[in-house]
Length: 360
Image (cartoon, rainbow, N blue to C red; front, side, top):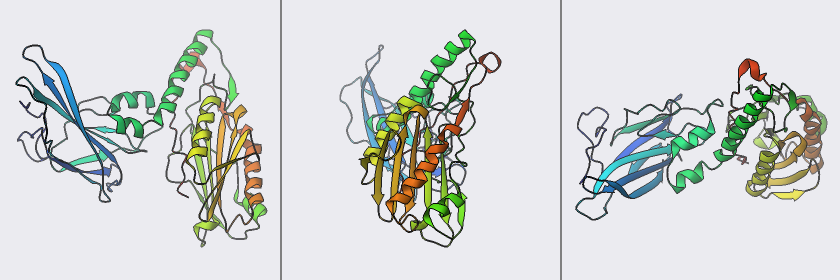
């Protein structure tokens, strides 16, 4: 038995869909309407059995990724559980792409309202950009999904844990009536909600002073991840020069425990990463093509810094280290004002931990 689908076969149709499939559609960015390749699409069928008293029986999942044109296809399910009282109860699609809000065919986030725009064929998935005010803990609960979805979203668990820890410490501070201002890295504080700003950690003139470069830079941000309360980036793009003359700076300000985890991820994920003892409490060197990287951990500040420099700009390893030491000397300036609980209440921090892997 197959339940009647609660969604249409096509966006412009009133005819109910076939829960068994097949399904197809396109995933696009909600702002630009451009296709999103590489988005994870997980489709699942839920089965029940029983007459009168019904109970879950099984679930089947098919996982794919969108192609270069943002399109996906889910084939019709070809094997079903046996039994006279067995029924196909529901079908669900989950779409996940880092940097965007997760998408479900049945519910919306963060409103938790029912979704009414899903269709079997010609479905259009519009992914909203992730905002730093969204709670990762609630997002993970909303997503659900099988092993592939949980694996893809596993990085959010760090941010979710920090949110929950911030809730506990914030409530404790409110009960005690404490008010304080603390530097980044002290886990008992709550951030103000303002985005992290690392623009004063390194300047064009300082880069030129270290490397001897005489050209100009176009200053901006690295585009792979958004700025949040816990992360910021700088991209010093050498005008009229190839990427080998660019300098990139990333800073994670996470608290001591999460900073350790973030640094370990860099050591495991960056290409050619090797531990060195050059700066901070722990540091590493990485290299890929014409780009060299130096990352380090400062436990007292709860900070992780990743600095990359093209070999055309940093012509010797010592230049990258001198730039990193300039950044390290200014980390104490990154302070987190803590709000007065009796005025603003125990608002939760909403962190967004980005992917530490740079496309080098």
